[in-house]
Length: 484
Image (tube, one colour):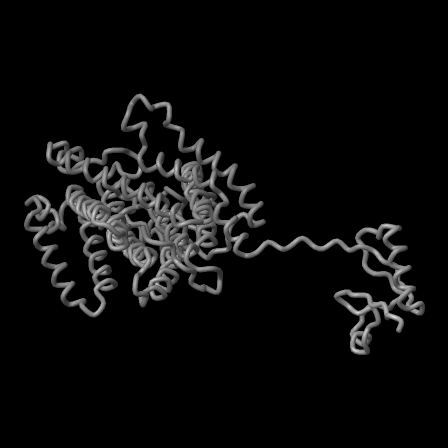
């Protein structure tokens, strides 16, 4: 019996009726090509086909290269996380120079006085091509970024209406640096380690400044009319009220890291930092700082105590009263004084700035121009009326929206991690950053800091924390990194 020759292949040589109906290409048509089949190989295929069935017509055959496998989402996500390593180094260095200002601590480093600007320019030069290469856009589309840019635009529009346009323009240049670094931060801080390092850096600066404030008060180094200490370094912290603002916003972060950390040593370090910040706040003799601190404590008790709020509130009140009893008598006297020259001047500028904002509602009187309208040649001493008077009511809406926008995402992150048996660090940081923003909202009511770094760093931290723990716009919680 003659053996029948069979051709073994993944597909039968003679298609079944079902395959014929599903076929897309006709046998006489040419298959999609990338490169032609080798001539000798094509002859071999034709010979083999004629042996099996001479009636089969062989189409023109070509080799189609297999497409390269697409990059998996996990690999792509890891590449995005590792992106901007060099830019992050620039952001970290810039923050170190802005917050610590080493050239003021050590006169031999005076040549670094312009280093922050140089680092900022280099960081931006690295950021732009890297960001375009990674995501093909200059920034993530975030509500806070849009509000910050809108705030900058309103500042630009206020210049032509300013009493001194040159003064307004110079203020806009300084403010533009704040907005640029803010945008860079929210795109560059892509891992928990990067965020944690930035938080530890500013926390260290807060502890150093608190320690210096305590030392100055103990040794009687009182700079402001011989009554209050001045900050160890200039810039952000030369004024004790501005120093108090920073300390108030750092205390919740320190407490959050205390609750999230493991190990007795780390908990002891964060507990010591929290106490040092609280005592340093007393050394500033800032009434606004005290009010902000009380609001922060109330917020933390409400968020962290759960069903035991009454017990924790009683304990917190007891500790607060005990702290006031141990505080210097001058500090208690200052807290109860509301009719001194400083308080009266602030009250007058508050009323005056409200009047200026009402008279110039569109674009204000120009950035940094309110001082020209003040009865005492002072700033507004209120960040909200500062924006309203100098940039207009539209800018005020942008500014308030910028400060309040992070709360929604932080609350969602807090709620998503609340029922976990072992709460991740993100849970406590979400609560801590909300408390820090509350502290800023309160203390900035008594300080003209709307165009300075404080709020923009806090909002950047909040955005980065949300982006680290939520996959995308659908807000699906990702597994949190292991606690340290």
